[in-house]
Image (cartoon, rainbow over all chains, first blue to last red; front, top):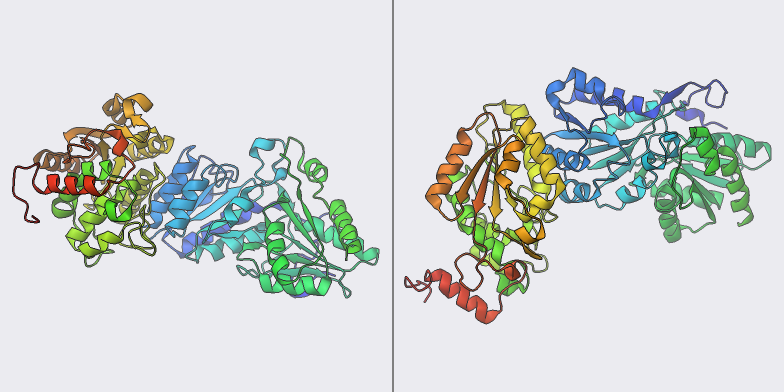
Amino acid sequence: MLNITQRLNKKILDDDVEQVPVRNGFGEGLLEAADNDKSIVGLCADLTESTRMKAFADKYPERFVQMGVAEQNLAVVSSGLASTGKIPFITSYAMFSPGRNWEQIRTTICYNDRPVKIIGSHAGVSVGPDGGTHQAIEDLAIMRVIPRMEVIVPCDAPEARKATNAIAQTSKPTYMRLAREKTPVMTTEETSFEIGKAYEMWRNEKVDVAIIGCGPLLHHALVAAQELAEEGIGSVVLNSHTIKPLDIETITGLAREAGAVVSVEEHQAAGGLGGAIAEVLMQTNPVPMEFIGVKDKFGQSGTPNELVVHYELDAAAIADAVRKVIKRK
Amino acid sequence: MLLEAGSGHTAGPLGMADIFTLLYFHIMNHDPKNPSWEDRDRIVLSNGHICPVQYATMARAGYFSVEELKTLRKFHSRLQGHPHREYLPALEISSGPLGSGLGQAVGMAIGERMDKGRNTDKYIYALLSDGEMDCGIIWESAMLAGRDKLQNLIAIIDRNGIQIDGYTWDIMPLEPLKAKWESFGWHVIEVDGHNFRALDEAIGEAQSVNDKPSVLIAHTIPGKGVHEFERDYHWHGKPPKKEEADMALRELRTLGGRVVSEHE
């Protein structure tokens, strides 16, 4: 059953659920955060409209720097700005930032301990027709291994708005990943968001499996949970929007209760949320686990739905993974 | 320092000693007792491997004791092998991987201008190596500084002609370097990197340019002051042995035998 305490969108599992790109929530959140804090500045590598930084740039042109197609420079200039007391938000496609500028992020932002907020849009295979070059599915792995970096994956536009306001107030280097396409709005203004605090979106009375996910694929996880419940398999769907710092307490407790885990993310199956969960559970409470993610492959052109199905990230694949992991208990 | 450390770079630090001396003791507004003073000028060392000369200059300027210089590259030392501001917060940036200092200086210059407007008299001095000009990111940063006419940014290139694998003209020819920077919208001054008067005038000229960032191409001699080390790229990345260090210090302290050293 949907977790009513989180006041999720009532139409969440309806066919006509409202669909909005996650990145829109970032654009709204950035404007709010900038209204509240004059030290927030924005830098973009020639993708101001599509990363939703345009509203900020139009309202605060004196606080916006157009960087051109220069993602390495995007990282280092933001570090310099942060050293003068600014809170820089830097945007590009995730494939290019943090994809192209990893070393600059490591050295000039994290090693220097600068509160730069790296926003990687158009992440995941659901970017669709642009093809594999533009589908960042390694970004979480390369960001979460850098000391000091916090890593956040909002599941929908309202969560992105809240996450943007939240990260604007920390002194930490942060990576936040956004999706391009319209995806179901699962949360509402009332749904909680706290960095590092996972929350349940779904829980059956009997819990046979914990489905722990992040990002828009959580909608597929919820559809799978509903389908599985009809077969008599009970689950919890946990929104682990913060991959670092991971909510170890909640995840370990849930794994202990359920006895089996399925991780869900639009990323390589290796190195992302699933990898982070497995690292923790192997040390605290090892249980059988299956990984929903891209299995060591690159993406390709197609519609978002075709690709999500092809790479076995959809509700049917999640349900299959649940049936498989339960047999391993 | 390098002898005690047992590793490190010899040629670059000696070649930049004059420029560091001029900046810390004559040009810059700074306060060694209050390194985070808001109105300070900033030195941004991009080619972090020449940090021994920055550490030595900072010690002489009063940031920390001269005795501490012997901890260079040692476990728990504040004087990391490449600069790390977590250990030594008086440093403006951590650096080592080449190419990233100019962009950080650009960010600082933009930040200053956002706060103080175009007429800010706080200068950002970005110290770069010539080998670093091989990095694409240098030109990304140069293009942005030129477009935004960052007049409070002054870059100084250590044009010593050497990099790890050989002479710059053999590895990756940079000339015409002056024309390259001019075409990116910078005011360029070529200067003898060992002539205090010429350097002082060049920096004064750079400060007076109010519609462009400026860059000094400072012609220096790697290993300057020690005949054995001078102009030899093999001294880029290795420290002297005991006898070589003794010889080098004697030569530096006596100006090659022309004066009597007070250390003798």
